[in-house]
Length: 389
Ligand SMILES: Nc1ncnc2c1ncn2[C@@H]1O[C@H](COP(=O)(O)OP(=O)(O)OP(=O)(O)O)[C@@H](O)[C@H]1O
Ligand SMILES: [Mg+2]
Image (tube, rainbow, N blue to C red):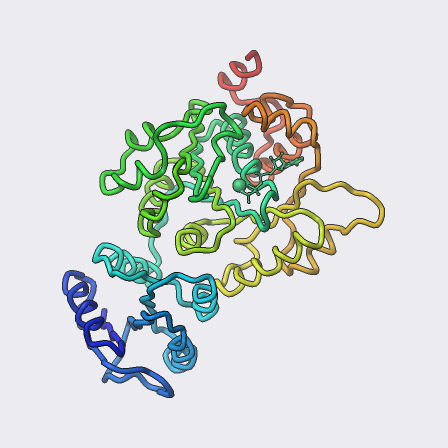
């Protein structure tokens, strides 16, 4: 790939040159000291595949240049290099189609991974067998973690497929506690630290077994260690999981950072979870605007309305469709008693109270996702085993 690096700072350009020299995918590097302000053509001859634009020192002004040049170079991929990943910068970058934002100091491994992702996007690659489903709460407390974990359980118990849930709420993730009464000492951070050697024994040692075919990798208990988790780690882990499990569920939480976007990009479907009240719909609308900026179509985004109670005068599913311009995929009823009991005990709702309206809604959702009839009791030994416990 031919790369153009642009920076006002000579030392930063040298830094880019040093890192780039170790990346095989870069066949030619042209460095330009200066800015792109007002330019409608890039300051180099011939085609450029990737623009590495240095935005260090906190300036987001160069994004205006990316926008203008994008009209003239529709196939150009841009990598931004920033000091701080502010949500404002990230959102503006996303809207311009920029997916690669690297934090300073540049790490050769991270830069290399960004180039590999760009290559993968240009050449469609076989994705492997499994399905990757991401769950995202549109606003705190929507029910995304409860649904992701319980859906994982229903999916595994009723279809016999191999299911892995990865808790990507890097700050205070607690998904595992929705389906288990213990928090493991090993977590995502241990997998990430050994990601170069990821294999099934590493995954098995990190995952809490909820069923023989359903494991959960929990988020780190100490949120301060999460800063070490990078998008490239998420990418390697999800790719490995996809190749080795039938379903990989990602609880991505609700902070929009580069790790979350990496997870959403890798997902086949994203299930944003929201409730039918105006504050939820307002936050959901903002998030759905981001989805549109990311070019996620209606087949990828499958909104779930949770805790629905149909009372006269309430907002309806049709109101949500109209406001969000992505069609609601499924609804789940509100049932405080059974959900609270399940959450407090850390026992999946299907196991604790299979007759509850929420368990029933989850069965419908799994049937819709898999296209299988899953109502007629669990498949074989697992469900018989747990029906007795
Ligand atoms: N269908 C439901 N009926 C009743 N209560 C529910 C239902 N779904 C979820 N809840 C309740 O909502 C609470 C919050 O759910 P959950 O933690 O899954 O939200 P979240 O979207 O993951 O939030 P966060 O953004 O903070 O991670 C749960 O503890 C549960 O008690
Ligand atoms: Mg959550």
